[in-house]
Length: 363
Image 1 (cartoon, rainbow, N blue to C red):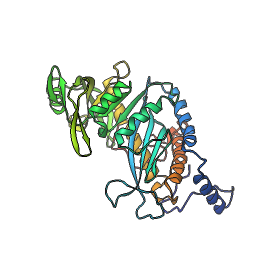
Image 2: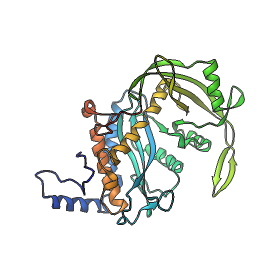
Image 3: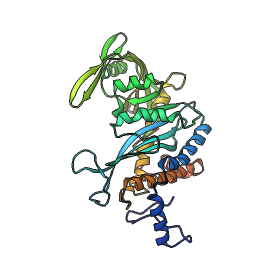
Image 4: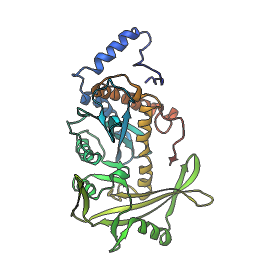
């Protein structure tokens, strides 16, 4: 659980156990041992997630999906780095599925982690080939059924996942999701509208309801929510090798939730989310789902803890993606232990080793 300093050259040795050289040598052997599988290292994390999910009160848990680029500067010893965006943007890409409590947004445990390298995708689950971000989500959804969780899962993803085709695929598989939506055309009250037009109409004709207190940038705020039903009825748009096409599909009814954070005295809107979800009303109210979407921020805090506010991931000296992936899972165990209920009193944003700054929004 020890936090590495910015200038740390390697894994810190434990006091009184062995010399620094012996500790470093032992760590090297462990992290480069091909018999140490990522699936085995992930099991303690999943065991913690199962236990904490069982003790939560909500009738569901959230699985937050996100990706983070790992850059090691001009580090040339890592021969399996992959080109991420352009030819000079070289590194690894970490994808994570973080289990989060439906009670209060407490981080429970990372349940799935993948590292994209030039030699393929390293995964804590079944072997998967490199594919676009949204193509990675359904395999994780299917894998989550084998984790032994006692409660159903709501998959929470930022607006990158706003895709009609994927909405239909996930719903057809029985998966529940909560996504922040961009502007798109839907059917509402029998007619075709843009989501932005529906939001404007709701503001004018059906004022959002004040549902509770909140906090925005450390200041007191109020949460206002309004909900309606929309139908995704248009063909999905596909882009395959530069060619655009349309993919017809069944009409899909979803909950549209407009959530706003307002200043208590002036009523000025400080933040706004437009959310789409197929979560049943019996599972969660619109207020609960609005709070659930904010709790997606826990995964950003997790990445920050790994990269700059605790584990200093992008300064690690390991020379292969496989060794880094193994060390990542050990570091994730420290993060999960730090976020345990026993350490909750000393935590910041759910992680006891997270950023020193306050989150931009907290509800």
